[in-house]
Length: 375
Picture (spheres, rainbow, N blue to C red):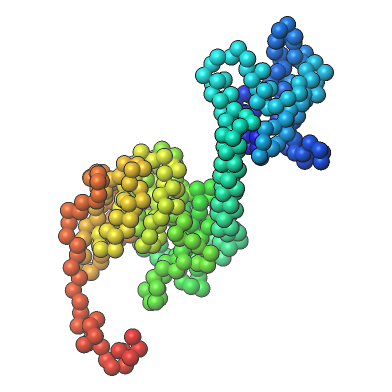
């Protein structure tokens, strides 16, 4: 049995154990643990003086492709044999479901049979694959020094958009004074920095949003580090909207955003890991927002119950897109949150999409010759 399997059994039986060691060339890797026979009386023979082997006198070989061999060095025991046989002997007469289940689990791996060999090979392949995934994920972590240039500073733009100083601190927002951007740090659930997205504050940049180098937005959700187990989650489209939704709904719900047009299995797994009772889909009220909502519903279908917070589709008298959660007042966000509709088989929209008027200057006929050549 491999090291993880041995430690799992020790934890189930309440046995102490020491760190694994390389061992001799003949015996290979070993781990010392409390002998499970300590305190047992079998056929009138008492194993060990005490009921608990605090000296970790039992040595178990760590083997990935075969049964583990065991030797207890206590003078009052001296057991020699296989890991399975030791556990069978120590649990002899114990008919509880837990004990029988443990022995069955060990037998699947430790018996010298073809089935056990197949099971050992399967676990080895899974372990290698898991290790490879973990290594790949760790490569995404950015050093905290990457965030230092933006730390502890927010532009007036954030306050003008309705984000409070307190909420900006909660989300750890920053300011790129050279790029003139409000910067949102993207962190995993464990708080490790994995990316940054900046929002232009000048209104003159060619692109409103800038993903800083190293950010794999197909994997990570903005707001994941603020998720609380067992609390409803609201999925919002963009960064400003996510922070404003959190501000309006706290502490009733957590909020995340994919920061783009995609929603992947990685995103779905992150949400599911927090065990929310339900997921609210709250994307913008335009065609792009509805497309993202459909992607979220597709990835989350069958995982957890989903609810729709359908955004309006109007433009106000000042030309502001009120369908964008980043433009909505807190009262409107809360009203949508409390007036949700269930999503059963698919999302069913009740409002018509906005009809945007195209100005003549936006058409090809309205462009100058020089503009056409440069377009």
